[in-house]
Image 1: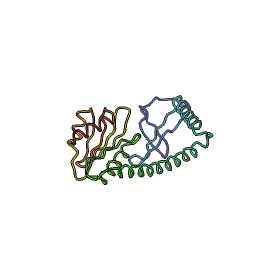
Image 2 (image 1 turned 60 degrees about the horizontal axis):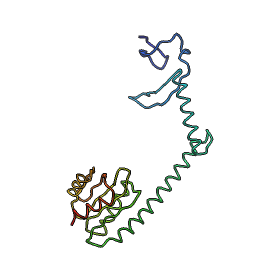
Image 3 (image 1 turned 45 degrees about the vertical axis):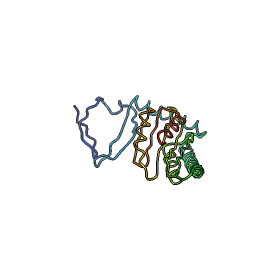
Image 4 (image 1 turned 60 degrees about the vertical axis):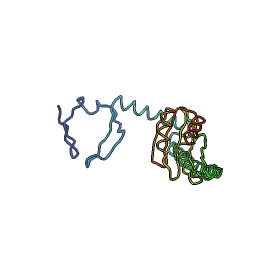
Length: 204
């Protein structure tokens, strides 16, 4: 055990490897810092670990630069540009999906079931479509999308309770999911066509 004193900064017990001089440690790289209990906690590597960390960081920066066609000192600017483009596309995609959901809802007859399959929907899109369908009909509504492992689903009904139906679907088609009385969401191992057939048969 060695007591290390840094004048004007700290005095503590050193539990690490002892060296004759500080210079024997080699280069020091601070990886991260965070506020902790009124002080600052640093994540530090030194010696060969510091060299390897710097090399790995440089390699990651080179890969990002190659992907974004940016020089090493311009990667942050390039990332911000791509993020702004992504945000704009996401906003546009949201609007296009809203128009599609409106069109699909308009095809529903009041009082009849409305089951729609749309490829490429994420969980939020499934939820939005199912809710939009319930605004057009009081019948059973379901938004389905094919996935790598089967089907993502969102089942809903205005003034209804779809929990029992969802539980039956999960049991029959190896699914997982649940929710509130009026809307349930999850996924199952069957294809969208099988899910639609099951829902229509169960809701006769």
